[in-house]
Length: 186
Image 1: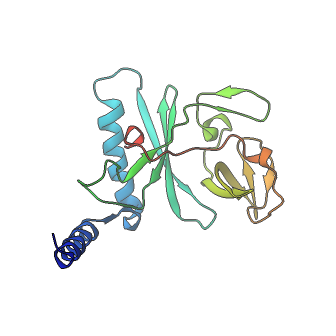
Image 2: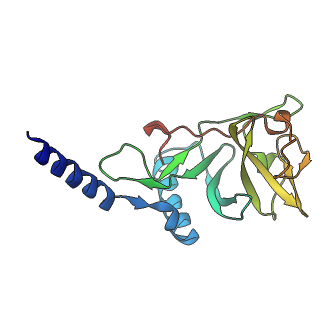
Image 3: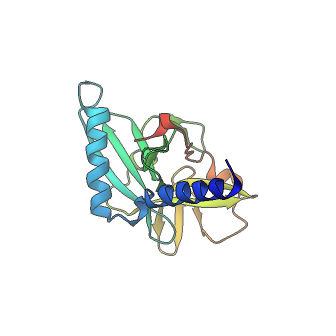
């Protein structure tokens, strides 16, 4: 294949892949809730007896933008869901939604929990957050609620300013991991 043909082929391939890209972060909150509800019902609720029902909640970042969701199952269990911003249908094994690989967490007192941070801390009528914080160059997601101008980490129950660079690593352990693998697609 000569150079001109190869360049033309690469341009065509790039154009096709870009045209096929889906920007899932451009969907409305209602559309996300609808799609996630259907996928959770199909994957977790059909033909099984482990869960009796589930609740779905949007999770906000420090800019009040929804980038994550929380599914709380009854009688126990939970998953955090991330919006994969751009994906290419049929050319990638990644979905438009990813699931956290965490299935339990440990609080600052060493107690292990198999329910979400929000359920354990009895958060019912407050806006839920999953904040992305960079500490020592490492990004970490931590569940929180906002009280006034400050946030409360649901892992440690300590109050913090999301813009304070002096926040300690201990405040954000454990964090909520997401891994870009097909096993963690929704």
